[in-house]
Image (cartoon, rainbow, N blue to C red; front, side, top):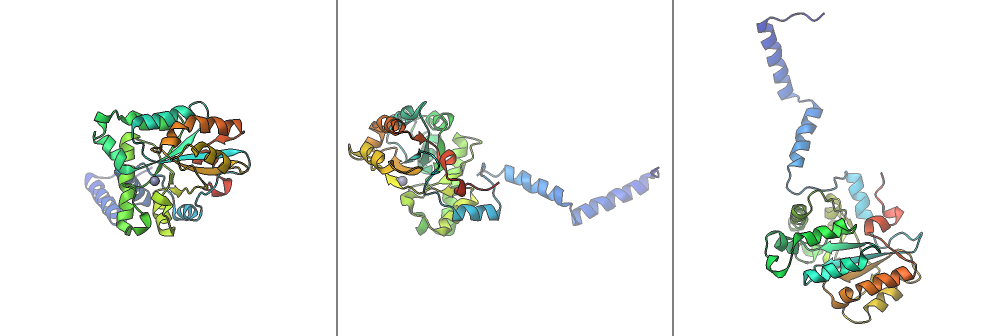
Length: 271
Ligand SMILES: [Zn+2]
Protein backbone atom coordinates (compact mmCIF):
# COMPACT_ATOMS: atom_id res chain seq x y z
CA UNK A 1 0.00 0.00 0.00
CA UNK A 2 1.50 3.38 -0.95
CA UNK A 3 1.87 5.74 1.94
CA UNK A 4 -0.45 8.72 1.80
CA UNK A 5 1.58 11.95 1.47
CA UNK A 6 0.86 15.19 3.23
CA UNK A 7 0.54 18.24 0.99
CA UNK A 8 3.99 19.42 2.09
CA UNK A 9 5.59 16.02 1.38
CA UNK A 10 3.87 15.90 -2.02
CA UNK A 11 5.29 19.30 -3.00
CA UNK A 12 8.78 18.22 -1.88
CA UNK A 13 8.63 15.05 -3.96
CA UNK A 14 7.26 16.98 -6.96
CA UNK A 15 10.05 19.58 -6.64
CA UNK A 16 12.67 16.84 -6.44
CA UNK A 17 11.28 15.04 -9.48
CA UNK A 18 11.11 18.23 -11.51
CA UNK A 19 14.68 19.15 -10.58
CA UNK A 20 16.06 15.72 -11.45
CA UNK A 21 14.18 15.83 -14.72
CA UNK A 22 15.80 19.14 -15.61
CA UNK A 23 19.26 17.99 -14.61
CA UNK A 24 19.03 14.53 -16.13
CA UNK A 25 16.15 14.27 -18.60
CA UNK A 26 15.14 10.74 -19.58
CA UNK A 27 16.46 9.92 -23.01
CA UNK A 28 13.06 9.12 -24.50
CA UNK A 29 11.72 12.53 -23.47
CA UNK A 30 14.73 14.15 -25.11
CA UNK A 31 14.23 12.10 -28.28
CA UNK A 32 10.61 13.15 -28.32
CA UNK A 33 11.61 16.80 -28.31
CA UNK A 34 14.26 16.28 -31.00
CA UNK A 35 11.73 14.36 -33.10
CA UNK A 36 9.22 17.18 -32.80
CA UNK A 37 11.85 19.75 -33.83
CA UNK A 38 12.61 17.61 -36.87
CA UNK A 39 8.99 17.48 -37.93
CA UNK A 40 8.78 21.25 -37.95
CA UNK A 41 12.00 21.61 -39.98
CA UNK A 42 11.07 23.34 -43.24
CA UNK A 43 13.09 21.06 -45.50
CA UNK A 44 11.23 17.83 -44.82
CA UNK A 45 10.29 15.33 -46.12
CA UNK A 46 13.69 13.74 -46.33
CA UNK A 47 14.55 10.06 -46.22
CA UNK A 48 16.35 9.98 -42.87
CA UNK A 49 19.31 7.64 -42.97
CA UNK A 50 21.94 6.71 -40.41
CA UNK A 51 25.63 7.18 -41.23
CA UNK A 52 26.06 3.60 -42.38
CA UNK A 53 23.14 3.91 -44.78
CA UNK A 54 24.46 7.23 -46.06
CA UNK A 55 27.84 5.60 -46.71
CA UNK A 56 26.06 2.90 -48.71
CA UNK A 57 24.53 5.55 -50.97
CA UNK A 58 27.91 7.28 -51.37
CA UNK A 59 29.46 3.96 -52.47
CA UNK A 60 26.60 2.93 -54.76
CA UNK A 61 26.15 5.36 -57.57
CA UNK A 62 23.50 3.96 -59.92
CA UNK A 63 24.99 3.48 -63.40
CA UNK A 64 22.85 0.65 -64.66
CA UNK A 65 19.57 -0.98 -63.65
CA UNK A 66 18.89 -4.64 -62.96
CA UNK A 67 20.36 -6.98 -65.54
CA UNK A 68 18.13 -9.95 -64.70
CA UNK A 69 15.43 -9.01 -67.22
CA UNK A 70 15.02 -6.76 -70.29
CA UNK A 71 14.29 -3.31 -68.91
CA UNK A 72 15.27 0.29 -69.57
CA UNK A 73 15.44 3.20 -67.15
CA UNK A 74 14.38 6.26 -69.16
CA UNK A 75 15.36 9.53 -67.49
CA UNK A 76 14.44 13.11 -68.43
CA UNK A 77 16.49 16.03 -67.10
CA UNK A 78 16.15 19.79 -66.51
CA UNK A 79 12.79 21.37 -67.30
CA UNK A 80 10.53 21.62 -70.35
CA UNK A 81 10.50 24.84 -72.39
CA UNK A 82 6.71 24.65 -72.43
CA UNK A 83 4.28 22.71 -70.24
CA UNK A 84 3.10 20.95 -73.42
CA UNK A 85 6.50 19.26 -73.78
CA UNK A 86 6.25 17.59 -70.39
CA UNK A 87 2.61 16.67 -71.04
CA UNK A 88 3.64 15.01 -74.34
CA UNK A 89 6.28 12.91 -72.63
CA UNK A 90 3.81 11.87 -69.91
CA UNK A 91 1.19 11.01 -72.54
CA UNK A 92 3.72 8.85 -74.39
CA UNK A 93 4.30 6.73 -71.27
CA UNK A 94 0.69 6.51 -70.17
CA UNK A 95 -0.38 2.91 -69.70
CA UNK A 96 2.92 1.70 -71.17
CA UNK A 97 5.69 2.30 -68.68
CA UNK A 98 7.47 4.60 -66.27
CA UNK A 99 10.34 7.09 -66.25
CA UNK A 100 12.32 9.30 -63.88
CA UNK A 101 12.32 13.10 -64.07
CA UNK A 102 15.25 15.08 -62.65
CA UNK A 103 13.91 18.57 -61.99
CA UNK A 104 15.59 21.94 -61.43
CA UNK A 105 14.75 23.72 -58.19
CA UNK A 106 14.63 27.28 -59.49
CA UNK A 107 12.04 26.30 -62.13
CA UNK A 108 9.93 24.62 -59.45
CA UNK A 109 10.31 27.85 -57.53
CA UNK A 110 9.03 29.90 -60.49
CA UNK A 111 6.02 27.63 -60.43
CA UNK A 112 5.29 28.09 -56.72
CA UNK A 113 5.82 31.85 -56.84
CA UNK A 114 3.41 32.13 -59.76
CA UNK A 115 6.04 33.42 -62.22
CA UNK A 116 5.09 30.79 -64.78
CA UNK A 117 1.37 31.11 -64.32
CA UNK A 118 0.76 33.28 -67.37
CA UNK A 119 2.51 30.79 -69.61
CA UNK A 120 0.03 27.97 -69.15
CA UNK A 121 1.93 26.49 -66.24
CA UNK A 122 0.26 24.77 -63.35
CA UNK A 123 1.76 22.85 -60.42
CA UNK A 124 -0.69 20.08 -61.23
CA UNK A 125 1.56 19.10 -64.14
CA UNK A 126 4.34 18.28 -61.67
CA UNK A 127 1.92 16.33 -59.50
CA UNK A 128 0.87 14.43 -62.62
CA UNK A 129 4.41 12.98 -62.85
CA UNK A 130 3.99 11.27 -59.49
CA UNK A 131 0.27 10.51 -59.89
CA UNK A 132 1.03 8.55 -63.04
CA UNK A 133 3.63 6.41 -61.28
CA UNK A 134 6.84 8.13 -62.37
CA UNK A 135 9.66 9.20 -60.12
CA UNK A 136 11.02 12.68 -59.38
CA UNK A 137 14.67 13.30 -58.60
CA UNK A 138 16.76 16.37 -57.78
CA UNK A 139 18.83 18.06 -60.50
CA UNK A 140 20.27 20.98 -58.58
CA UNK A 141 18.88 24.46 -58.22
CA UNK A 142 20.15 26.42 -61.25
CA UNK A 143 22.03 23.79 -63.19
CA UNK A 144 25.45 24.67 -61.87
CA UNK A 145 28.46 22.43 -61.38
CA UNK A 146 28.20 20.90 -57.92
CA UNK A 147 31.87 19.91 -57.56
CA UNK A 148 32.79 23.61 -57.84
CA UNK A 149 30.54 24.68 -54.95
CA UNK A 150 31.62 25.18 -51.36
CA UNK A 151 30.11 22.89 -48.72
CA UNK A 152 27.50 25.32 -47.47
CA UNK A 153 26.41 26.42 -50.96
CA UNK A 154 26.09 22.76 -51.95
CA UNK A 155 23.95 21.89 -48.91
CA UNK A 156 21.88 24.98 -49.52
CA UNK A 157 21.07 23.79 -53.06
CA UNK A 158 19.59 20.59 -51.66
CA UNK A 159 17.74 22.38 -48.84
CA UNK A 160 16.15 24.86 -51.23
CA UNK A 161 15.19 22.10 -53.65
CA UNK A 162 13.51 20.01 -50.94
CA UNK A 163 11.76 23.09 -49.64
CA UNK A 164 10.20 24.01 -52.95
CA UNK A 165 9.30 20.44 -53.94
CA UNK A 166 7.54 19.89 -50.61
CA UNK A 167 5.33 22.90 -51.38
CA UNK A 168 4.17 21.25 -54.60
CA UNK A 169 4.21 17.62 -53.47
CA UNK A 170 3.86 17.53 -49.69
CA UNK A 171 4.83 14.14 -48.33
CA UNK A 172 6.71 12.99 -51.43
CA UNK A 173 10.11 11.60 -50.39
CA UNK A 174 12.72 11.83 -53.18
CA UNK A 175 15.45 9.16 -53.16
CA UNK A 176 17.63 10.02 -56.18
CA UNK A 177 19.52 12.94 -57.68
CA UNK A 178 21.54 13.64 -60.78
CA UNK A 179 24.12 16.40 -60.56
CA UNK A 180 23.96 18.81 -63.53
CA UNK A 181 26.38 17.56 -66.25
CA UNK A 182 26.84 14.42 -64.11
CA UNK A 183 29.47 16.53 -62.35
CA UNK A 184 29.75 14.55 -59.15
CA UNK A 185 32.46 13.39 -56.77
CA UNK A 186 32.50 11.66 -53.39
CA UNK A 187 31.86 14.92 -51.52
CA UNK A 188 28.81 15.72 -53.66
CA UNK A 189 27.48 12.17 -53.26
CA UNK A 190 27.97 12.48 -49.49
CA UNK A 191 25.94 15.69 -49.30
CA UNK A 192 23.25 14.02 -51.44
CA UNK A 193 23.24 11.03 -49.08
CA UNK A 194 22.65 13.35 -46.11
CA UNK A 195 19.41 14.23 -47.87
CA UNK A 196 18.64 10.56 -48.50
CA UNK A 197 19.56 10.79 -52.20
CA UNK A 198 21.55 8.33 -54.33
CA UNK A 199 23.28 9.63 -57.45
CA UNK A 200 22.12 8.33 -60.86
CA UNK A 201 24.47 8.36 -63.83
CA UNK A 202 23.56 7.15 -67.32
CA UNK A 203 24.89 4.75 -69.95
CA UNK A 204 23.10 5.86 -73.12
CA UNK A 205 22.53 9.40 -74.37
CA UNK A 206 19.63 10.16 -76.68
CA UNK A 207 20.95 13.66 -77.55
CA UNK A 208 17.41 14.68 -78.48
CA UNK A 209 18.48 17.32 -81.00
CA UNK A 210 18.25 15.34 -84.25
CA UNK A 211 15.74 13.03 -85.93
CA UNK A 212 18.19 10.22 -85.11
CA UNK A 213 17.19 10.41 -81.44
CA UNK A 214 14.90 7.38 -81.58
CA UNK A 215 17.56 5.32 -83.37
CA UNK A 216 20.20 6.33 -80.87
CA UNK A 217 18.09 5.20 -77.94
CA UNK A 218 17.07 1.89 -79.51
CA UNK A 219 20.53 0.95 -80.76
CA UNK A 220 22.05 2.15 -77.47
CA UNK A 221 19.95 -0.11 -75.26
CA UNK A 222 19.80 -3.21 -77.53
CA UNK A 223 21.68 -6.20 -76.26
CA UNK A 224 21.82 -5.05 -72.65
CA UNK A 225 19.43 -5.09 -69.73
CA UNK A 226 19.04 -2.16 -67.37
CA UNK A 227 20.45 0.65 -69.53
CA UNK A 228 19.94 4.11 -68.07
CA UNK A 229 19.00 6.53 -70.89
CA UNK A 230 19.62 10.27 -70.56
CA UNK A 231 17.04 12.49 -72.30
CA UNK A 232 15.92 16.08 -71.76
CA UNK A 233 12.45 17.50 -71.28
CA UNK A 234 13.22 20.48 -73.52
CA UNK A 235 15.02 18.84 -76.45
CA UNK A 236 12.77 18.72 -79.51
CA UNK A 237 13.23 15.09 -80.55
CA UNK A 238 13.21 13.71 -77.01
CA UNK A 239 9.71 15.18 -76.90
CA UNK A 240 8.40 14.63 -80.44
CA UNK A 241 9.73 11.06 -80.64
CA UNK A 242 8.86 10.07 -77.06
CA UNK A 243 5.85 7.98 -78.11
CA UNK A 244 7.83 6.23 -80.88
CA UNK A 245 10.68 5.51 -78.48
CA UNK A 246 8.34 4.08 -75.84
CA UNK A 247 6.57 1.89 -78.40
CA UNK A 248 9.81 0.68 -80.00
CA UNK A 249 11.28 -0.28 -76.61
CA UNK A 250 8.15 -2.21 -75.67
CA UNK A 251 8.06 -3.92 -79.07
CA UNK A 252 11.62 -5.03 -78.45
CA UNK A 253 10.55 -6.70 -75.21
CA UNK A 254 11.74 -4.07 -72.72
CA UNK A 255 9.90 -2.93 -69.62
CA UNK A 256 10.21 0.77 -68.83
CA UNK A 257 10.95 1.27 -65.14
CA UNK A 258 11.57 4.14 -62.78
CA UNK A 259 15.01 4.13 -61.16
CA UNK A 260 13.40 2.99 -57.89
CA UNK A 261 11.74 -0.04 -59.52
CA UNK A 262 14.44 -0.89 -62.03
CA UNK A 263 17.57 -0.45 -59.96
CA UNK A 264 19.97 -3.31 -59.53
CA UNK A 265 19.61 -5.30 -56.25
CA UNK A 266 23.23 -4.56 -55.32
CA UNK A 267 22.53 -0.80 -55.40
CA UNK A 268 19.42 -1.20 -53.26
CA UNK A 269 19.80 0.19 -49.74
CA UNK A 270 19.69 -2.86 -47.45
CA UNK A 271 16.89 -3.18 -44.93
ZN1 LIG B 1 20.78 18.89 -66.87
